[in-house]
Amino acid sequence: MRVLLVEDEVRLADNLAAALRDGPGFAVDWAEDGEAGDDFARTPCYDLIVLDLMLPKLDGLSLLKRLRARRDSTPVLILTAKEGADSIIQLLNAGADDYLAKPFDLGELLARAKALIRRGKGAAHPTFTVLGLEVNTLEQTVSRNGVFIDLSPTEYRVLEYLIHRPRVIVSKRELLEHLYDYNWEHHSNVIEVHVSNLRKKLDAAQPEAEPIIETMRGRGYRLAPTFPPEAGTSAESGAALKSIAEPGK
Image (tube, rainbow, N blue to C red):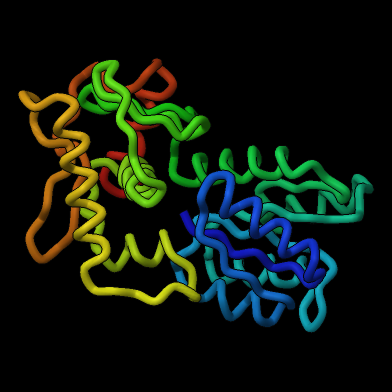
């Protein structure tokens, strides 16, 4: 997943970016003022925007209003030093999805960030089960029919992105845009290599089962083209998977 962090305090921005990269393994782009944040956000590749309110050039509330005015529905987590009810109501009415008052706990920020990304993709439950494959996005663990699968950090990130978009064909370009930040030097075959390794590990855990990742030649990759009726770890997670699998969702 890829996060845009808009924060002008360099030390805080460094700490937040490190926590987002080291914990959940997100790719992070940093903008140090509101205008730069607006420029970054015009690229439709972000799964979450973490936005400070007090910014130079363009304040956070104005940037939020710009995003929503151009129908950008990317989840936005606001960082604010203002805790008054009127300020919070104004933020929520302007389109903020959640907020944290400074100072805040990094663990809470990560939990809220992951929850917003899940909800932004239509999934309320942190655990996904598809064709015997179980992915726990909180613990970042993967198993298939009870067999634990050891994935590299990048292999896990590829799988996590695909499992949020079951039955949708995801292009190599889309994977690159959502898994890497602007500082990464793109190589043409890196996605093919990671997907190939990922597929081998998933299939090795249950050789007799149908492949979980399907390659659509010239188009990209698709996860679990066929869902069994029991897909999902609970009624809630099953409904979430059905919702995001339906066309137009």
